[in-house]
Length: 295
Image (cartoon, rainbow, N blue to C red; front, side):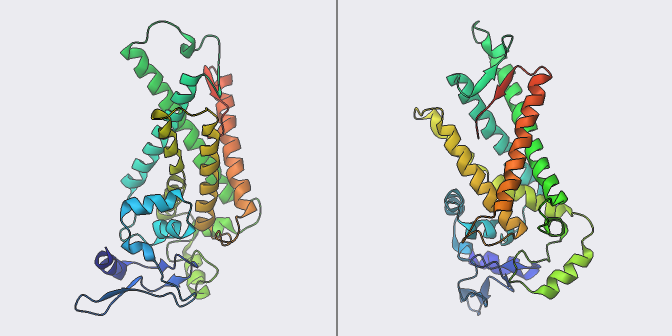
């Protein structure tokens, strides 16, 4: 793992220290003859990125524990940048997890409002066709809601209602630093290139949102054990704060290890409000079901 990182960082424009967010020239030092050591950050004197030694399953567990350091690693220090298809796969998994939550709530008849003519109120025997019909409907609902949520948050970042300089950070290319500790000259040179959001920044935004939403995997526990349906609210709370963490690091809005940004919390709240409004609009336009669960 370390050797692969040593090779990959040669072509990398920038890496960051996962502890303080400062730019670092490299994550590992190769002294030759197989002597490879983790680099030390010059700003905080800590190991720049301990996660280069971690296996994927350990990275996933750290993500679930809401560690800011692992989010920095995932966003900035991966040996190979995330490809478009990888991000699409993560988004599809997120949609399927949402669909699973919706199916669970319908099965429990909790946290959901069905119109009298809803197909979910039909008491006739369940067939393979009806199961396919239900699944397609829930997948489309989950897809639309997530698209609205991601787009709403992105739009609010672009509008920057709290004057937090989010728009510039959104448009800044990958050579810009995500931390106030980083070299100001690099940020200035980078900002001259930034006139619109690049595809790379869009991919990084979607990556941050998807990675920080995988707390929804806890909902799969309902397949194994019986929980009260309000357990879904707890999952929603975990996802909310992990979204705040991911966006705070993406936007470099303060240090999440010391305090959560109230502005980013308001940003995520507005995105969730837009998602709920989308449900209301669909219900008003004839969609036969609406969910009122925070998840």
